[in-house]
Image: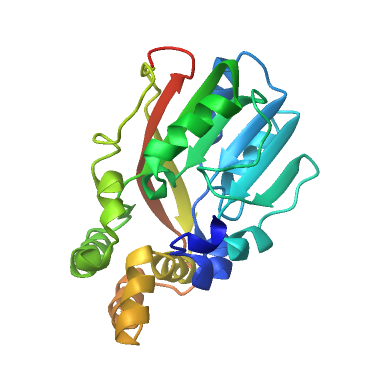
Length: 253
């Protein structure tokens, strides 16, 4: 299963691990509060473990799976997290084992007609399913933000088809459970410019452009961004709106 996975991030797994933003702690607090138990969380499509480690401070165990062996190889180690290479649609987890099934910035890559039955199989009675995605970033400073938004527009034709679900906040994703009201959240960070460059280079659109054209599109952005950024080590505020899609697995489906 994992060998057939269209791995958009394996070639940039190290950059992905170093440059992707961290999710707000309030998100994980809310998830834990909704769950009937906190024995096991399944972090599906875990990438390099950004969410897995946060879940581990609230659940006894976390099993974190991803179809990309490169991503799992660079995952953040934690004594309560067990990383496995496995597809979302065929996880290898025991039946009725998970109190929470979480998907961070990955649901749009799954084959949902095969994934939802796997969710039902793995979920304990009353388990919570939650997937979240963050929308386009905004950078402190009008000139800087305009440059980033221009780059987003230029690279947009290179996004894989599934990326449309991120752009519309998962509004069109099939969801078989009764939706819960979720908190209003955002990711807030303060980054130096080099990390922003790493983040841009981890986009699946940039990976695809570089693979097909043989050049890095971020290179053209470096000079104008450096000129607008200011001091080399200056940190600037960056924000991503966060959308959370959640429901109890045994309700409404």
